[in-house]
Length: 321
Image 1 (cartoon, rainbow, N blue to C red):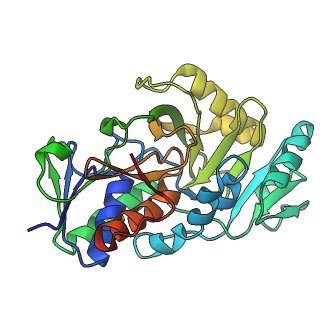
Image 2 (cartoon, rainbow, N blue to C red; image 1 turned 120 degrees about the vertical axis):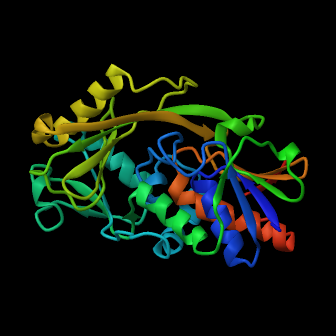
């Protein structure tokens, strides 16, 4: 018998399930697609655990809670703690100055030879030394494996909170249909460029096409991501690919010869303030609004949701609707 039913097996639902197990609860986990795959924004994420970088545009809650994310992921999947870099082309140096004023947890670097030898053409950067990153697909697999070890499997079924008895955590993203929830379209590209060596995520502050590049294994890089106020679920547009590749070329011209492996697009669920939250609505606990902070904020949402279910505590991310 389950103590709580969790609907949705993206990063939010999986984190909630594992947090339930660690709190002594037995979850039932249901998703209409079954196990994670290329059918949700968790699959297409960058996997940057970069709360201080996000502070340039995000609310303080994201910075504060995001700092605890890496500790959660350590027990699930490999976490790379080599920090992250923010760079700008010489003509856009003012963008770097503005980014520095809006953020903390960094130091200015004028010689990148020790950090990223392949970026020595860029003379000025911000090094966010305490940030980390992970491979999202490995993280999803790690969560599934950790739950399976506890006898928790993902059921493939189409259900709604109304059709389930007992406590429910709804982590369905856009499908939850919460008031005020909007879709923010994001598109990404995966390249293989074995001649380029980067060991940590790099953000390029481009006035028109800001870019982040996250290294994966074997010379593979994830490039992301567009951010469009649109509910369009079609595949990646030619414009998005052109913009992402143009920005990558500006960072390192050798990306022009990279092998294009994959493109992806999906809708990030977001509230008006872009802060993820636990919403209490009609007896259902909703984990939603992760926006572009999925892997950064899902552990905090899960912790506050489970804390509410077990002790009735309402943390700062818990809102009543």
